[in-house]
Length: 85
Image 1 (tube, rainbow, N blue to C red):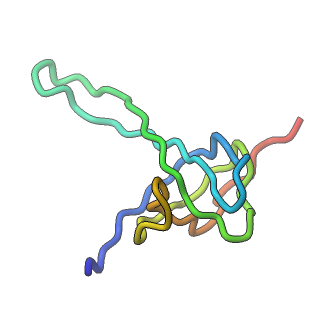
Image 2 (tube, one colour; image 1 turned 45 degrees about the horizontal axis):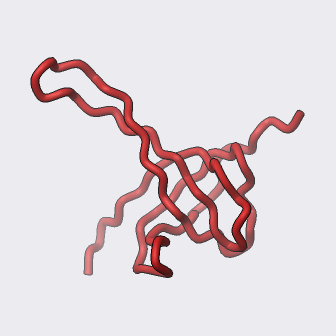
């Protein structure tokens, strides 16, 4: 069992499922040959027990045990709410 679990901050891109959100995380990495910083994105399925996070919200997610076929992350807290127009 690992003590230090990975944590990421990302933006919720979908909240259409029940108790599940899709979080887009921006990852900056250096190109091995050209040494330029490249911005890449990954999407994670995260468990949101109380359905608190909405589309556009900034959330903190942490890795967990497998909860379903794709869900391996849990929403810890909503850091920032999206601007509703």
